[in-house]
Every structure is written in structure tokens, then in C-alpha cells.
Image 1 (cartoon, helix red, strand yellow):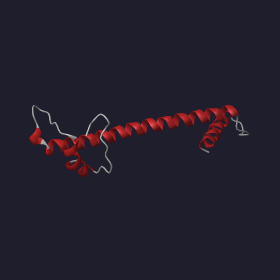
Image 2 (cartoon, one colour; image 1 turned 180 degrees about the vertical axis):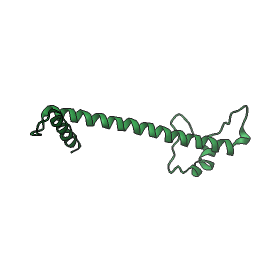
Image 3 (cartoon, helix red, strand yellow; image 1 turned 90 degrees about the vertical axis):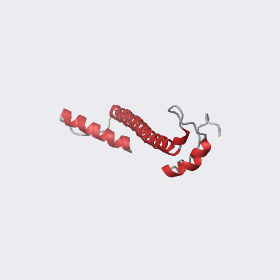
Image 4 (cartoon, helix red, strand yellow; image 1 turned 135 degrees about the horizontal axis):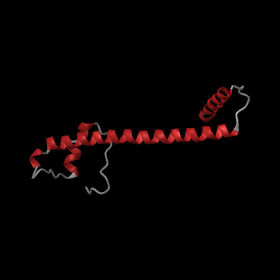
Length: 108
């Protein structure tokens, strides 16, 4: 339905530019509308991925700050080494994470 609406808008613009009446929906206009809507959907997906990166980065900063505060006593030479177990029980419930799974490269 979205493609048809866009095609009609394109066809109306074409008719206005040529100062003619809108008589029919041409196949080339429909093809152009299809490509236009596909590109818009791709752009929307890309923008969603950017938004997700910003959200994930914010969550990572929150987690890092919580680890720095809660495990400051473990700090050595500017690094804090913790296993997943103390982080699970002490940090994750406080940052609003409903379900958390450690990445596969971290062994529990």
C-alpha cells in the first residue's frame, strides 16, 4: 500500500510539472516508487543500527562505572579483573537488565 501511495504522489508531481491531467499510473513510475520505498526501508534499518549502538554504548558505560565503584578494591595498575560471577550478582540487577547472557568468548 505504501508503494502505491508514493507512486501516486510521483505521478501527480509529474503531471503538475508537465501541466497535464493525472490519467493513469505508469509502470516506470511504479518501479521508481518501489525502489524509493526499498531505499527508505534500508535507511531506516541503518538509522536503527546507529540508535542501537548509542544505547549499547550507554549501557556499557553504566556497567563499567558500576564495576569501577563496586570492585575498586580489586584495582591493580589501573585494571580491575573480575570473573562473571561477582558481576552477575552484584552489578547487573542494578542497571535494569532483564536478561543477560555472557558473550560466548567469556567462560563462566
